[in-house]
Image 1 (cartoon, one colour):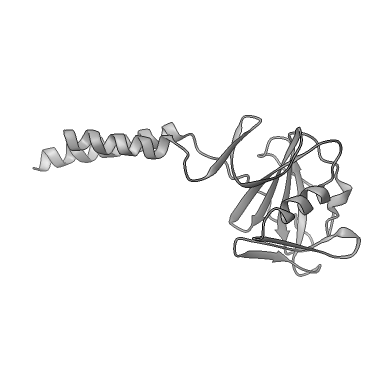
Image 2 (cartoon, one colour):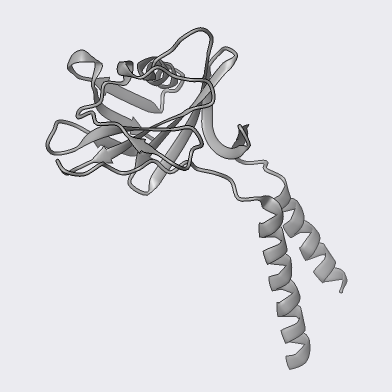
Length: 187
């Protein structure tokens, strides 16, 4: 019984305290952000989706800002990110954390999605995208997904949210209790 309590205590602490990732409460949505860039009272979330890998970055600013301002500031804040631009500030390629995507229409390019809640995204008809055409609003999400077909909308961004830690802890505790009961019956 003593062993079980120790295991349950360790599991609860491990899942109830966010110590490894950088979690940020963005208007009620707990987002797993890579890092923050910029300073100011206004905040917007940049979400990049490379197929199944998705990353979020918090951008802060004062006054007015565009999607291009956000991309350039987030890019400059890390040596792990590289963004290249084509004519008219169109996004050519984005690379981060071993992922890279983009290029020239019609093979592969980035598309812009906008959201006010990080879950419902609206596709912006832009190929290739011009991020300086979009004014940022405090509290909004600006997402980029790869598109590989002319008639598609590209990969919709998926905001990397954090599951409520109490739920994960309860699932683990339930599993340990069930395992203990089964062991007791067999032994």
